[in-house]
Amino acid sequence: MTAVTVIGLGIMGGPMAANLVKAGFDVTGFNRSKAKVDQLVEQGGRGAAGIAEAVREADVVITMLPDSPDVEEVVLGADGILAHAPTGSLWIDASTIRPDVSVRLAQAAAAQGLRAVDAPVSGGESGAIEASLSIMVGGGGAEFEAARPVLEAVGSTVVHVGPTGSGQTVKAANQLIVAGTIELVAEAIVFLEAHGVDTEAAVKVLAGGLAGNRILDRKAAGMRARTFQPGFRIDLHHKDMGIVTAAAREAGVAIPLGAAVAQLMAAARAQGHGNLDHSALLLIVEQLSGR
Ligand code: NAD
Image 1: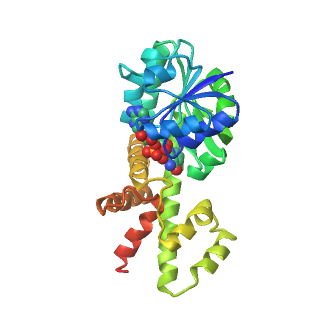
Image 2: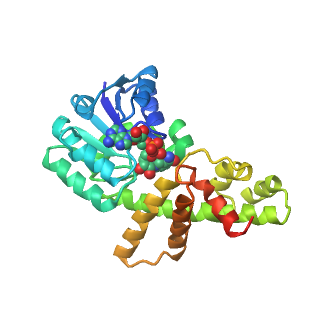
Image 3: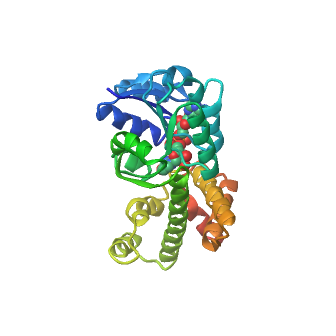
């Protein structure tokens, strides 16, 4: 049985690990807060007290951590993956991090005799729970094929998009589209409310036309009700807008709308909304509109 270790059992990593258990993998989990590890054990996985213990006998190690410095620490640290995972094991980074960091860490992994792919995901908490994530994989063809059975247990769209780091570049583009779409849905809802329109009926008809999109399907009800339980925290999406802004600058590409939404996310954080779902951008639209 393939031994898979998951490091980072949060909103996404927790359900991904549970789905790997359901798919028949021998799953070990580690998370900084022990309660998440206990939850995985209740779901049929094993718990570890540290990274070294978690990865020592792993065939595959998945990281699902918040940001580039977290992944760097977990991979390169004295107690980390490269120091303790077996030679020949496969490291899959499903976190959303900077493409340049992804490339550097994959090179460090190769120098230690490990294989690596970047495999960031899209589909949100519901996609993680339903094992229907869309997964964009960067790395060599052989590494992609080695990662595929594990990724297909947590996702329904698994695509090799190019060499190491390109999964993260595609994910940055994904975050640009999602950010702009959420902002426009938020503006539309505040606009409709200001006109006294029944927003439930409006969302229903909008979802059936050219304006239809997953944000309308999944987030509009919560936005209308002002329930912003994450989901995907504004802090993390703001981090992703930093990634896409830097990568766009590096490539000489203008992203004026993306830059504007990044500023609105910065405002949301400054207002103390960083731990709310990214759909809470609506609160900033309301505030700007004096409502
Ligand atoms: P989260 O904050 O819920 O989970 C991260 C987990 O990592 C936490 O449980 C935290 O305790 C743990 N952690 C942090 N540092 C650690 C360390 N050094 N050792 C062990 N555990 C550590 O975040 P999330 O929403 O699950 O997101 C994880 C990654 O996936 C991020 O890069 C995010 O951008 C990306 N992502 C999130 C979503 C979403 O909808 N939530 C969707 C797609 C991608």
